[in-house]
Amino acid sequence: MHWEWKNCPTGWQGSFSGKSRKSTIVLEAVADFDTWIWHAFFGIPGTQNDITVLGRSPLFDALTEGQSPQLDYHINNHRYNMGYYLANGIYPKWATLVQAIRRPQNEAEAYFTTKQEAFRKDVERAFGVLQNMIVEDERADYYNGESDDDESDPNRSRRARARILDEARENLERDPRSGRITMSEYMSRYRMIRSPVGNRHLQDDLVQHLWSLRGQAP
Image 1: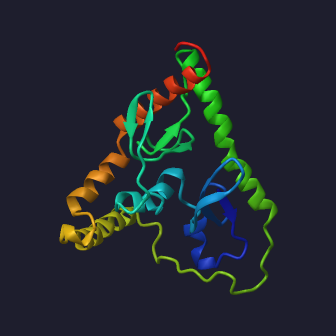
Image 2 (image 1 turned 90 degrees about the horizontal axis):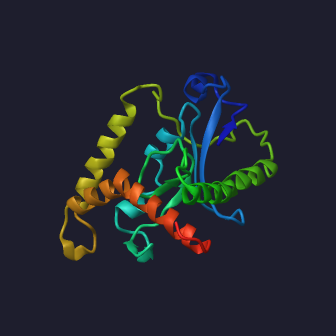
């Protein structure tokens, strides 16, 4: 969600202005049915979109580093060990994200898409609650964050990813007895999270499982 930044400094407006031509700050959030917000990533430039925000977000850092809670569950008789989030169609096909099916081919897929879109509205409702809670801060120095000098640099995200991997390599190549994962394990998790094949298998299993709970054969 894009939040308008009315008092954005003139020197930063180019970096924080997206297609609306207004200075905005992006909020990424994960919320459930009772509007409980489990994750929030706030403050990056409004020129970002859903895809580039995800690339900079710490949402899956703990999972990649092996520090997230261990999961072990079955869907449609297949075993899974990573959680997943419901997302809209603009997000990439990752094993940790499940989108609605744009063009359902059968009743099971149509039923799944109807349910998925209904549950995904929980996030939209959470954003609506946040909007109603906004209290404008009139202090001239209300923004305490730091801004990168050149957000418009097209190579910035590439350098950022390289820096993250370099830091991970330094931190993770250590004695396995330390309880930390190695760099090879880190990269394996990184690829597993972003697997399009994993996304397809998970979605297929969810479609079949949800349809079976409806009491009809797929």
